[in-house]
Length: 593
Image 1 (tube, rainbow, N blue to C red):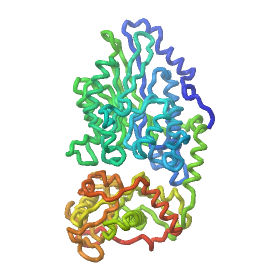
Image 2 (image 1 turned 60 degrees about the horizontal axis):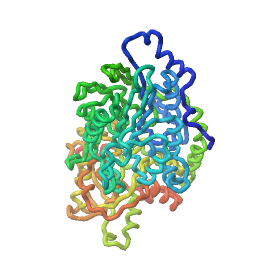
Image 3 (image 1 turned 180 degrees about the vertical axis):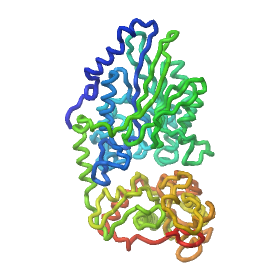
């Protein structure tokens, strides 16, 4: 890898220096009021996107809205802003979910892992160091590959990973730095002290339970923010407090909070309840919020902004300060988002990471089998499609093999899967790793739980809430009957091993009809082994019974890897080996399609 000096790679240009001089103009110097302006730039949910490349399609990323992706383009926007206002007047931060999400990120966590002795430097570490970030908050997906990988990634960064509410269970103290203070030199008066406080959604407790249980705790964002903001204001005497929060603004959670676990998407709650905050860089929700203004409890106006994920946007906060009674005060602040599709990929990022990119492209294009027909997910959210049956079949086979010779070996194994993607395609002919990876885009692992027939019925009823109640008769628009109450596709589940109808003319809670196993009505007391991904097994999506059910087996190998192994072993991908029609949508008993 070519040597790169991160401190000069994207540093201030002559134009930036000129801008800094202009800020201290003769007119400003004559003013009796001291003022200073600075800019904070923010990214979030980069999810391993360095370049504008879709590894699943083996082509440049594109969408109908004309968006582009990748930190390489964001780097160009960052450089332009630094040239405009002077690098010394800027701060660059991130709100988490960095090392998971693309084959590029997966490759350097599992195939050629950074955790190995003498392993490579993670591409996201290389890129973020080159762009010269000041700090980044931890996201929930930072924990997916285990603490050893996370700590290795942390050690490769030239800036701190922040987690004020990521608490070491043994010591009761933050396991990562809670905050980072940046000093900005002003033309007149003392330095401006800007604190960046990092917070992470408490959902890690559920989603990565096997990794963090007994090791790390994740108290609510509000609780920890209240403590640390007060500390920063009173003991560190900072002038500006910016929270980088991997937590959306909706106030909702995808899990049950009645147990005392904090709210998943709590950024707005933090702004409304914790005094002393000036701005929040929001993450986790994968939505674009250019600017939201919230009244804080101390009368301070808090600016919230969330740039669109994957490096599609960059948030720009601009702050105007005034010197008042011996300290700097925020006089005005605002936020905007910049679209990365206006920028070219920065040549410095291209230079240092093209080799890694090319290596991953070669990896995902490896042929592992032959498909007898095209398999796709275009209609998988409302029709029982063979491509999803592939997932449930692989999970069934893995769990059956794991339980062979155990006390549970004779119990029937059933399996859960969701239609994650609407665009996944496994074409007839060569099946490549990228095709299978596009089918299972998350790094979930497999768990086996014990559920009864009655619990399976409840589970299916809950899943069927995904559909909009639709009266019998008349034409049906497929796009109008799914995602009821904004439920995402990944929170709709197939369950294999049964046959059943989902009657969408009925109200939610009474839609599952003719539930049978092996041709017979399901006995409520019968036990089943439920093959389920770890996200769902730990409470993700708040499906009933599964989180509390007895766990009889689990593993750390990704389900995606198991699918690749299964297809490789078979050589041929023939629906005759895995497909079955288990469920059908109906209205008053009449099939919809």
